[in-house]
Length: 431
Ligand SMILES: [Zn+2]
Image (cartoon, rainbow, N blue to C red; front, top):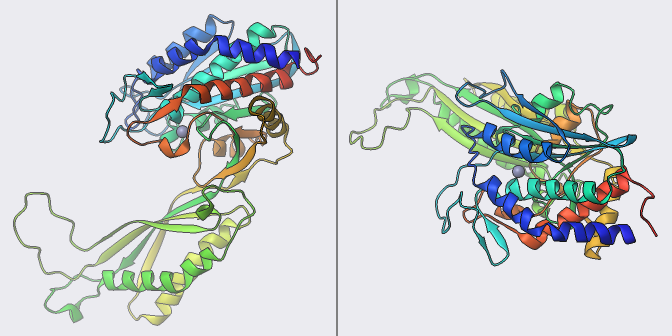
């Protein structure tokens, strides 16, 4: 395994650079919303990769949601061709981060290094992962310049707000066409010994019950939309939640509570709008004529999306049959199909073997309860050979004092470098 040793040493020699790059990325506050400094972070990565022989494109997602001249949605795609034709391995990381929120004890954009951890918003989700993939690529290129195929690295916008100005846009432009890219690794913070194969499906909808406004002292003259919604919620408790809890999946979703169908009621609004803070008057007596809830249904690969929606419409029809004067509307807001890469797919088996060699333990296979950019690569790009694998602990994402461990970044960068060697230089260097 002479090759493994050389790549491991090449990554270890770059530990300082790995930390410095992570810090540089954190110090560019790419907050989303609204989408700040996307151009700056793309230029930083572009300059670095151009100096190492990559051909770099900066792609603005013109016309994508939230794209504007003030907050343009910039993406970076870098490609380095090998000596001969072969497969292309693509690392995709999102460069946007969520708001900082309260409770920080360090500067969220300071990139502080302390006790083997780099702190900051985006440290684990996922600037540490981007840095690990860049260092893995550089270690691989220096160790194995005579490789076949191609190596791509992209840094993309807006994952935190759906990915439409990022991976979805690039996929629509053909960047993830299976003829161009054969293996995709997304270094989201799933931990250095876990391979994430995909995610559950999503269906968001708004349900509105309708009533008729009247004076609150004579509610019998109106129709109370909130009472109608109360009946909908009671029916959900009686029939829908037990049904969802009974649906289990073969997908290895973590945490285990998400290994079944779930439904969250994200919001409820009915009647008079809430008054502004500081308003000292009383509310007015009115029968509410509208009540709305937003539902967030997460479904399993074994479920038919049409069935998922039919369950809700059947429930509404049951309530309607029991309640005179009941009428409603369902508006669909957002939908993502579940996806799960085959365990025997080449990128899965290759990364699993590299994890075993680097960490001396078997890889765990997991599925994410929520979605990430793999959805666009799968559905728009039609590319199935895609996983999430990267350093960091998922629970720390979006939290105050977010951090990524230096040793974790180094280990996962080593796994990525070995993966590149196995996919782009098979058979070389094995003694
Ligand atoms: Zn992320």
